[in-house]
Figure 1 (cartoon, rainbow, N blue to C red):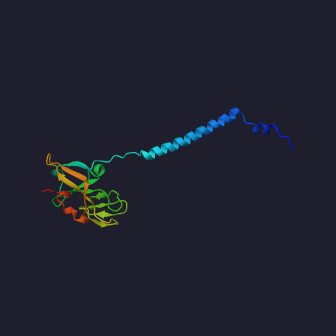
Figure 2: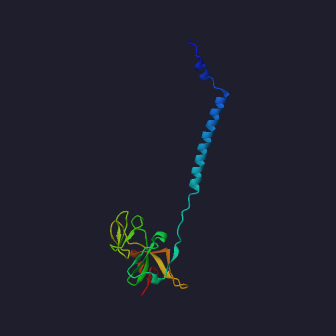
Figure 3: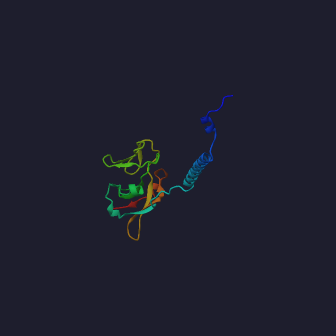
Length: 175
């Protein structure tokens, strides 16, 4: 039997300090792994809360909206266009009925166009091109009797295919 060299003898021998160093390192790694799991679980149980704009908001006086114009002031903040067309003011909800992308108003082409899949809508919200299955939805719009301002309520939606666009709360008559 061959005798072990000095290096082999020292490699087999583990000092108390070396063992404790490895044990402490292992516990630190274990604690970090458990801490990461607890943090992930906490993130799952308490997700970030996103800001949702109010469903009811004021847009101004009826006189502020010129005839034949699509007003885009409220698209970014509230997700609606205010349209003054054929003596009626109505609020179109700025969500494509295909997959929910926000369409853009193209003034030069006089239409709404969805950038995601190419759906097109006329000024009144009726679909005419692309994969969209139905027209844009309208939101409830009315004049506040206290101050005469237009109020839009996105919680109440009106759909063309259900005949709801003729509902008196889906538009405001203007002269």
